[in-house]
Length: 58
Image (cartoon, rainbow, N blue to C red; front, side, top):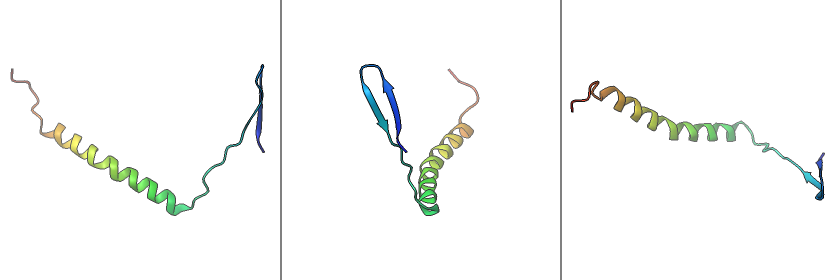
């Protein structure tokens, strides 16, 4: 059912929102790709923080 919104001097604007109806496989692929991109950066940040000196020697 479309949502009708009436604004002054603009008439009716209809907004119809549809959601993707993919299965669990699609969700697993999207989450897996997201993890695959995030983990290397988090690992690199953690390692660089762990091996960095605690005091500045200037």
